[in-house]
Length: 591
Image (cartoon, rainbow, N blue to C red; front, side):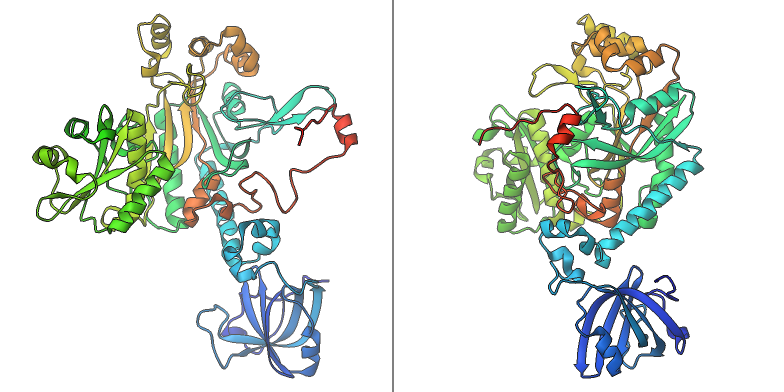
């Protein structure tokens, strides 16, 4: 019926003038000039073409057609009198001899204007996502995603990695987030879980004798949405290497990613190997974040000695951190908003003062600093016309608030923010353990399957009380780009004895390890090679490349912030018969 179109709507040029063509697409717009003259814009996946109606028959064919109807147009290409240099097809138009309706739009009013859908309410966009995706500006992000995934796959194969798919239905595993559970019909009362990541399977592949594995892996986590995190489902470039260490993983990423970022990114400059490496503790002290944006040349200075006793109450007995900004021209109104935004994001206040061009301390908390003026200037190395942002509190809170302050200052300080580039860095030497905020007990900080720096010896010393477990670092690393964490990875703990000792420190014995990770524990007892891996997030990667602030803009059919698919009405109600078959009883709180 259809696929006899001769050209796409983005293809025709001056060399096609005089040719008979057949186009197919969506009726984007109709502008009637007179009884037998109208200008029609036809749009398909590839572009738009102007169609000029000049006859009574052709006018009758489009009369009454709603916008977005799918049609074919047969006619002759001719040169336009009034050319549009902004369009690739702006030099020509088509005069039709036949128009056929393929799919009639039965709605007089659309939920939003297709070419302005990004201005519409997000819930409307998600409910009518199939219309939203007709907008070329929306569609281009999905095309970008397709091209990036293809480039990643090709690059990994060139590096000698084998693409292997791992199971979607698996066992529940304590990996840090909530599982999505799937009831088993054949095994009443038991559940599968959708994998939070293919972590155990890829390690088992290494134990199975495969050397280099990768896949564009779907991962499922029941967690809240953020601007850079989609609820429910996301994808990552999952990879693992046998007989490998941290350096091997870094080398692969540093070869694969920069060319893709430089080719497909909104900015065409990307860090080259080797990426900057920053130990975790240094990152927190210097940048106030384990996700520093190295495009910003501002850093944190410890101001505790100079300012803790200045008489300003929030500084008393606190750690004080400073961010100094030369040639900062923001107005008082902008500074007030800056401090308010920092408090909103960090939950802690930010303070400030200036050293003006005369060398006087003015503004903000200046009155508390007059008696210590010279000491403050010397301690912070201040020059005239410098803005100083300040944070205070317990060490970690002061550091993190300073990190937020840096990122809020950057747009107001273009001299210090080199925006149009991709800056990668590795954050290394993460703590193996941390104190749980809710439990108040020792917990794994990142991946429980990581190799501790110091191996079995340091774990034994920690168990004997000779070493503070909080000082143990692991061969764990994060890949960060422009302040966004693209991935976490690690050298894996492939020795069952070391694994058992690592879990003992978080109150899990050998039997617990065997019960929670039976396949991995047993596989490692048969002799496993050292192995390491990483899994950069594809969604976050494409978000950065597209220059978008929301991850939903680069996912074909995203959920909303409440993990709902408004288009498919999911999650939805199922029948009692379905519940009975799965041996499930549903309960709900009383209203």
